[in-house]
Amino acid sequence: MIAGRLNRWLDGLADESGDHIVVMHGISSRVLRGIMAGYPVHPVHGAPIAPSLVQGSIALVENGEERVLYGSERGIEHA
Image (cartoon, rainbow, N blue to C red; front, side, top):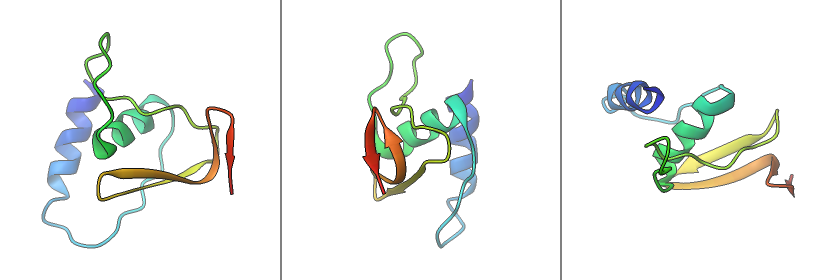
């Protein structure tokens, strides 16, 4: 359900140009980043799920690739 809602939201952005800043947390963030960065579909949940980031992290998804600009992913520090 989360992936469906996020895909509809992304489809609505198709007519808008420019960059977008999205502030979110939890599983919704992981699914959105998973969709935008092309992560594989999780076999149980049926949606692409990106790795968990610590609270306060900043990720950039650009041209289908994700970079953690600030924070931590899987114990790896980024600054």
